[in-house]
Length: 193
Image 1 (cartoon, rainbow, N blue to C red):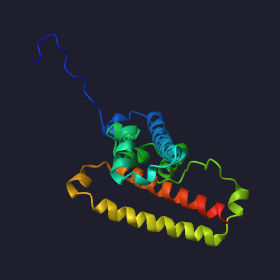
Image 2 (cartoon, helix red, strand yellow; image 1 turned 120 degrees about the horizontal axis):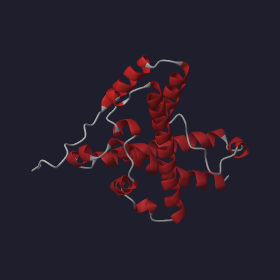
Image 3 (cartoon, one colour; image 1 turned 120 degrees about the vertical axis):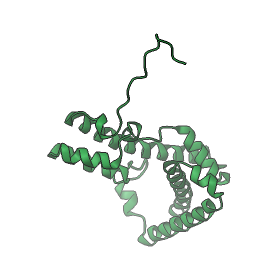
């Protein structure tokens, strides 16, 4: 119980009310964009580290990848941390509508959708130009087959367990799985030309 000397808990402001001015909103938009760009980099780095370790990643199940990624933490973006919904962001965007806010909002949406990507570590234009189009098509077909197999595997996880999983981490685990298997396949395809 609280005694007379215990101060009451500080009120927490969430949602659109957590942003008091245009500059705070602009800062939030940029923080959310940076978060998503950095998250993609973390996921990419995670996959690269698994590949660098060599062997063993083939034996990882979807649940293994999910747990490993969950342990990385930081699965809420700055807006989610403050209880600010997409609807709140839309309301604030209309309230503080100007060119700088619109550009920051566009950057945030691109980052959320993966439109601002992490540059490949070893990719160059000359390497890309030397890859035959048929090989690119075959790689995409392989990615699609890999993804469909992954969906089938995911559906075998008991429904209650699936619903308890964080959607962002599920998406990241799927991305890592497809990235690893595709990278290995690409290395084999490119080195055997």
